[in-house]
Figure 1 (cartoon, helix red, strand yellow):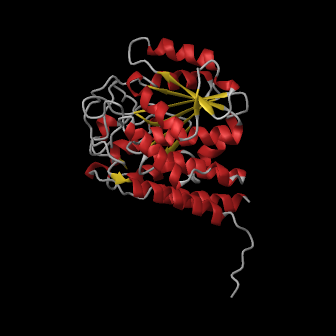
Figure 2 (cartoon, rainbow, N blue to C red):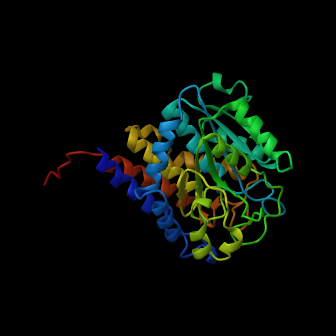
Figure 3 (cartoon, rainbow, N blue to C red):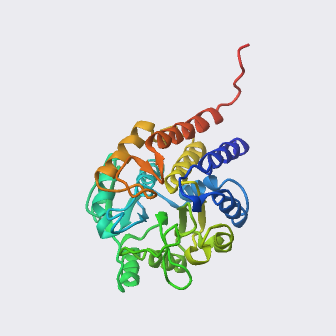
Length: 334
């Protein structure tokens, strides 16, 4: 049902690119970045493109390296609520759909938060060298912000032999080597240099997916010119780091959820979808582990200024779009 699946995924993309953020600098941006990303990837729904890449490359017995982590002191010392929830929900779905083992990477300061968020999504925590022996488990591994980041990246790729790399809400540097927040302010924290992983993966021919919302995240190097054109202070914050697939959304979590929903549509397995109750549990765990809302800096149940009710509603609607959109032959009985 390729045409039916494409229609479903177009509607998934429409939903997660509706602008609902609190920040002025995000208004009028998301739709333009989405259109640019579509053009750069040959057209078609971005969620479907990314879902097919996951299903093509992730495999039973293999590993997928997945990274997130935005923020830093003083306002976001344990990270923010956009990124970790999306990463763990996608990690769970990838394992369930393919049997691949997800390994999560982030800044040392964000590890405890990411571990708590992963547990809330139903992923057990194991040592990185033992995690493949346990279903529905993951390991959280530190990423370096120091000069040894490139050496560490090579060691991780050699050690884990990933089939795929995925980034969710992970800031990348611009062409001058500096990273900026979505507001255009320089990143003040000890930012892990995840770009070293993606640069080396590209050299080795390892597939990659970037998920983001504002153009400063890993992956948006694919449409850097559009970021500079449509995003306020885009000349500064546009990252140079490209990925093979790019999913843009109003919030990075939403982009990850849309890919999960597209995977459910492609495979016909609606059990890949997470529920509003799981969304609530994951968000609460993230905040309880000291993450803050990225737009307000407050330790509240919100993502980029949007309350928990909005997150639950998005999850509900994604599920409805997939379940109803995949029905065939339904006839109204009157």
